[in-house]
Image (tube, rainbow, N blue to C red; front, side, top):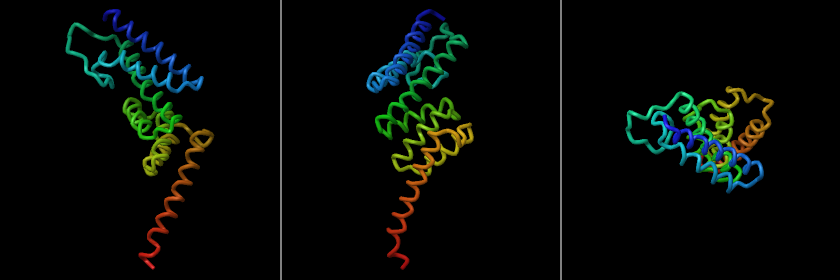
Length: 175
């Protein structure tokens, strides 16, 4: 495959690194910008990946296994890292969507399960959040994982509030 694919992959890798550095520095807007640009560079390069924009059919363009792996990793990183940004920004619906896309590529990814679970919990999808938490615990985020423990506590609290609200709501009906 020509160097243009390799060049696009290298640019996307640099954007991922820039996004990670911006995220660590607390520059969420800069991180989001870099993460969004990753997909612009890798979309359509591999029709078998999770790319959103299909590439035109061209039988003369064959990707190497390494290129396919890089594109898959970068596409996953785009969605998973955006989910992290959305969690920080408390944009629960967008975080849930990004987390779901990340999990389509890697269904057992601990960070993606946590991020989507957090977004589901905060947006009121308690059952969905519980599913993600249970999956994350099975994948290897055991009881020692502080983030999962915090999510578990938050989820238990929200379930109690929901139950209390429902009891109050239906108290007069069955009295």
